[in-house]
Length: 270
Length: 258
Image 1 (cartoon, rainbow over the protein chains, first blue to last red):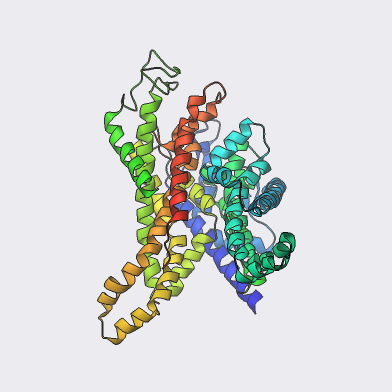
Image 2: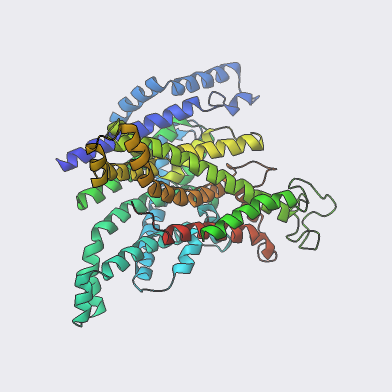
């Protein structure tokens, strides 16, 4: 029952996100203009066809109906700005982003959690990293020749560190932990047997949040580091007002974020 | 820490009146000049005084982020408060969930990219301010809603209701003052988040437009490279880190519990 409820919530949110995105692009200033129309090489007929295609895509109701029918047949539509089927574009770009997210999240968690365990240290560095914008960190890393996933590690680690250290500090001062310490139980055992079990629900919730943080950071990172991933694709789609591509990518991001939240809520119903 | 921030803020606002040169004035005979007595942070490629631009940009970014944070906190207080009292709860929570279903930075960049880019500096400031304010209400609204729900069933509210306290007085005298610390905490959290968001937007060319300076478009200058030989180019980075770090220290040290 809980799973069904979560699936229903994800479905509603994803459709609402797609619809909101479509409305936003439709009413965005300049949507009706296509720069290809000023290309002198195009004939009147070609320009008429361009306008007709554009008009089809800006009719939100028709676009969504067509999209749902096509989706049922595994067709995500066609990207005008990339002149390619959207499914092929996503399939082509997804591996780079997924790899970046996987390594970034794994590294961020590893460093964030490992550095949070000692009671002192790294706070100043974490504070400094948290005080810099994502785009600047990406740019500084690019200057040093660092890979995009390393940028993600540098962005995620201090955020995870800050939450994890607060949680660990609270759990470490609980009366039963003090009692265990007084009885001579080793710190390693206290950590594994008392502290980590106590903070697992919060860490699971933080895991879902970190997925959203990583996806959000992927766009400026990919835009600045010139990574051919989904973040850069979304960025280009927004700049080109490519409605079908933007709706698909928004729904994809909404699915990833809400699914991560749903999994964390199912793993930790409290 | 709050005092230090307030003093910094005042200095940024007041110093702008005592700028060594106007932020847009171009000294055509000294482009890309190094630090000197006349230009303590040098000049950019158009010959504009970097110190003047940094001081004015600080004022723009801080005022913009504070105004946007006030806007989003006001929206959050209104919607979160209404939802917390049980009015239109499902609709407001649904709308907040919709906003939170997309990562904040993704949402911000997508929406900003869909709005006009070739606009005057003042219009770009207004767009950025409205965008940050309008898109950032969801998370604070959920916190305010939870606080109002908790407060509305608390003992002192129950007692006030039992003594026949009218509804408006309950809200004005009992609920709002007690929900204020939560709202204040949200404000302190939101301002640095918006400063950073504006900087990211600026670095991607979607923030405040030239010639008006802001931390975002000042940081964009770093994209030209050459930091190694020109350490003074890092002045906006240091100032940004100091200000955002101070805000974070305020949030960590103050007690904002209900």
